[in-house]
Image 1 (tube, rainbow, N blue to C red):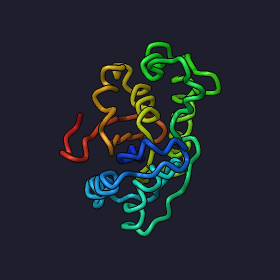
Image 2: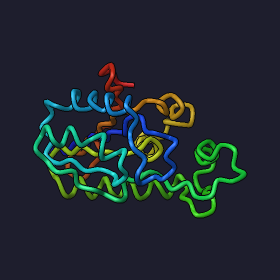
Image 3: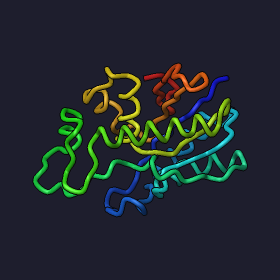
Image 4: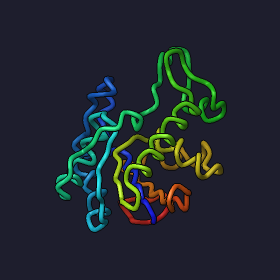
Length: 191
């Protein structure tokens, strides 16, 4: 019995809003989120979950509305906590090269990856044989892709960093990982 999870990275958000919880989508993001709906509209999604951050919820809300489903918040699908980055030139690059590095008050790549994988496995357990859509974030999703595809490195992350939304399909047979596909919803092509 296969369980499929579609992770949907949020559409373009307003970077001028510094509060992680309340950062909204831009007008472009509001329009672009519909590409994810179009891509998944014929998929038999049985549940829609999301990071509780506004930009992630807002990205998957039209899909949930289309399917007549609520958006269930899952705290562990939030973005990695950056912490105090004063004096750190490129936090993400440093975290990719030293998976244990965390800015003061922040999370390391390894910490984010651990909580995201655990949350994914909990979904697989909760919705066996189902299909779940999850609103999420770029770095968080990159840690998940890297867990299942160790060759996904900083250069690969740089290629998808600006892709908003970005869809990643993860399939399990029972509790065993089967496959992962990274999808550009604008073209429908695997990347």
